[in-house]
Amino acid sequence: MNTGNEARPDRTSRVPHFTFADSLEAQEAQLAANPLIERFRASRRAMAADPHRPLYHFVSPESSLNDPNGLCFWQGRWHLFYQGYPPEDRRQHWGHAVSPDLIHWRDLPYAIYPNPEECCYSGATWVEDDRVIAMYHGTQAGNMVAVSSDPLLLNWEKVTGRAVIPLSAAPAVFDPCIWKKDGFYYSLSGGTLPHESSGRRRPAEFLLRSADLKTWEYLHPFVEGDAFSLVGDDGACPYFWPIGDAQSGQRHILLHFSHMSGGHYLLGDYDKVRDKFVVTQGGSFTFGTFYPGGVHAPSATPDGKGGVIAIFNINVGRPTPGWDQIMSLPRRLTLSGRNQLAVEPAGDIESLRCEHRKVEAMTLPANREIVLESVRGNALEISAEIDPWNAPLVEMNVLRAPGREEFTRIAFYKQGGFQNWERFLSWDKWLDTCNSLITLDTSYSSQLPDAQPRAPETAPVFIAPNEPLKLRVFIDRSVVEVFVNGRQCVAARVYPGRADSLGVSLRAQGRDATLRKLDAWTMRGIYEED
Image (cartoon, rainbow, N blue to C red; front, side, top):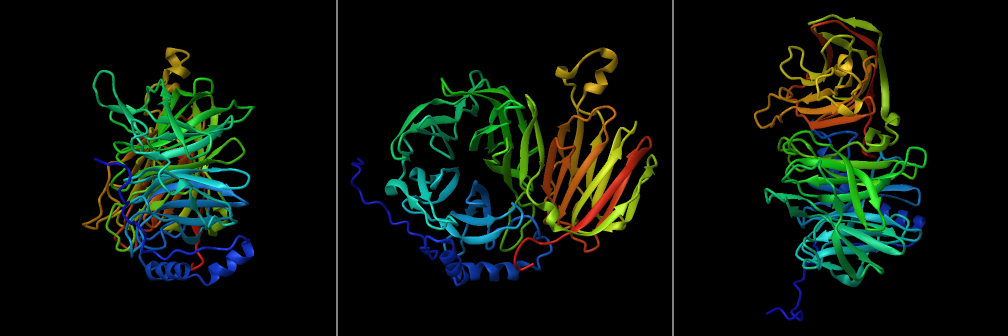
């Protein structure tokens, strides 16, 4: 019988751990001579020649990474945490990077180390005036709380030194998030309840409350009226934040990850009297399986302007010695209507642009591929505006080999999606109310025998009948991200095996379309070593 007096195992990390000063100037001086930072620099230099290692998407400085954690803004800087796997102790630690603009990331020492927990898994942060609170899952212990108040969030102290929410405290104790209301801290613990008819699990998100971060009481399942999650989904890595403003109407969004079907969100209203989240809409960030090469879990924080900044890890699709997963570009989520989510790239991505190339307006003749001879590269941003007219399909191929031996296909199917009855006015106009589809197809991206193609990512996006198609395409060696008219984003990993898989082409199927304009830029790297 466990009496609670047994000695806990010593799970002290073997990674060097440092204590830093309280002033920014002193911290910077310490970092300049810090052996972990020098180790990170050397590791980045050693892996820089890997042709599939991205230049402007964040990658762990050494070894692997997994979920992003605790994205936040503190004293004028953005902080990204992530599950890092240090080479001398492969248990998850919270890796740490800081940025002035969400794009240029600077490595900092590991932030949170395991002990008494076995591993430091996923969690979120809550920023107060005088400190930042991190809440995360400590395996074999429960949900943990740590706090930091120094300028670069280098020193973390664990509240009580043990799990503040033990594994037995709620129906499930797993990946947590945290917020504050009316003098109390609230936390969701990712978890599920059986579906009423099938018995299979559905996301529930268990709500807990505390006055002091030390003692928590379990309240109830938080999510109400969710008709949008798939039966079998779970609600891991939750992030619950307000979205919108007084003008657009403030609502709440719950971003989360399903170990069955990838990244998702629920949109709805926070009933603060009953402490329930009443769901009115839902959607996805992953449009297929999350492995191989798909969008995985979110980390998110409000931007103070009615939007939510989200970043995701994107899975590996081919063995790459020494590293694997990467982070997506940060995305700004906003409301474009009561139940409509808008998405745009966030941060100062424009600062990476160089070597501008412009393609003038032209007709895209039906059934003929047009290779853009002036646009080539594997680290590019492409901004294109296309009028499909009556062409049912318009596509852009990137990372294209000269003979089309390898290529990644971005396809727009005009009005090829489901009917949306909320837009329906009359039967003679029913087609104009259908969603279009955007597809990111990596089936022929690589000839390498160990590259794993994924089924095409296909996402709905509504484009009005006379509205042009606007694409922002980000290509970064082994990842492609596509933003569509500020309303949708698809992303996946790619691994071209040929050095000449650099081309870009356009094609209209069935009928002519018009390229209104296209701009492309070579993109710089984001690290000191670049």
